[in-house]
Length: 229
Image (cartoon, rainbow, N blue to C red):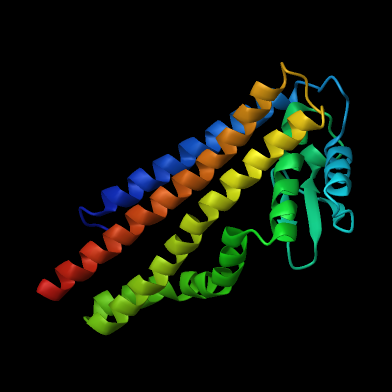
């Protein structure tokens, strides 16, 4: 009860609201421009393959994956996976998302520093996310300061991963817009819409990072209060 029902829980609520609003915004924006077919008529798959070939990384495979907005680039296997609403669709949303994922593939090919840093941090952050909350909970309940502090440090690794992710995502979107304009895959009227799609997606990463920051702050406050007790 001490961990979950105290005044600091307002930080969790604020974080949850931020993430919810960001997710609603990106979904609404994606849906809006999913109904706007591009004049050029390229599908997400065609755009991805064209961009990768022109960038000299045609060896990267482009595969469909189930779900909505599950698009991602797998640097380990050199595979770009596009969701069902992107792969064969010709909408502004589909093309923008496909180009964004190509941005990650280009980052990988160029050895983009923040992408390499994120890949290096990922295993540690994943491990930290799995042990952080249990350590903090048991540390607070048992009054073991050391255990609580280790849990807080582990949770901080998750936040570090999310912070490093921000420039990776913003850079991928920047690359996508430049390429789409240079290669003429969008008309002048379609580019602002694509920019909105990519900007809305970036908001989810910002909101998630803020939410994690608020949770970390809460754990630090709880730990300090417990130590004073």
